[in-house]
Image 1 (tube, rainbow, N blue to C red):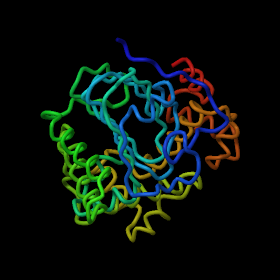
Image 2 (tube, rainbow, N blue to C red):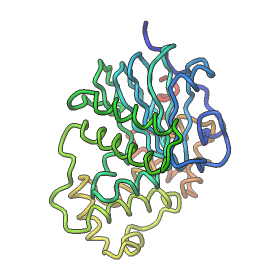
Image 3 (spheres, rainbow, N blue to C red):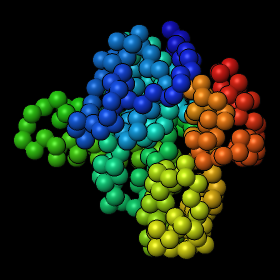
Length: 311
């Protein structure tokens, strides 16, 4: 049976939920939450419309079945086993084949960062959206990659996490943290390529992580790279070297890229005017915003919105 496709209906603003369909505070009642895919999606006719979570990190694991995922406006067809990692503030939605078998893990992103803090560079594997596929995948630009090894370590880790979450044994929270860490490590080991940063001075991974956190928090204010570097206790030149060595892009490129990503999200998922979106990103002059967007994205905001709406 072919996977269903997401239907697009632009809203005045991209919905932000605690868990899907539950508006309100972004703070989760627990540091982690585990549920089957079917428990929530079947209540919504197997479609989770595009939305985001302000402070929540999610892992979706499909054991069996098919789905169409959309992550920040880019789609990928999934066939289980497959996993999707969704950092906070990422626009995402899913259309599932009825009866799909799998799990959704939701955790407070600052807590996930804390769990991985002992291993420099490990969080960097999760701070941007990612798709790992053990099954057949029709890659369509959402970053889907063929996973290393077998899916069993991930499947066993997520089953163990679900058991601890549903249980009531002593030291339950510590056990959930341990199980969540095991799952994250299994997903990290399944990612292809070199998963350890190299060629950076001591402290560089921490500086890079803190810089990206500052960018995520302040990009709408259009801060200077020098001011953000000063908060890290390093110079703008040092910050640029770290960014280029680890990511192949300069510090200003990362800042501008985050601004462009937010503009793309608003253009794709809301009905706000181009002028309003530009103002929200700190551009008082609509013409300057249009030139900025066109330089980074290769087309005008209006053209990008039209392409996104065509799917």
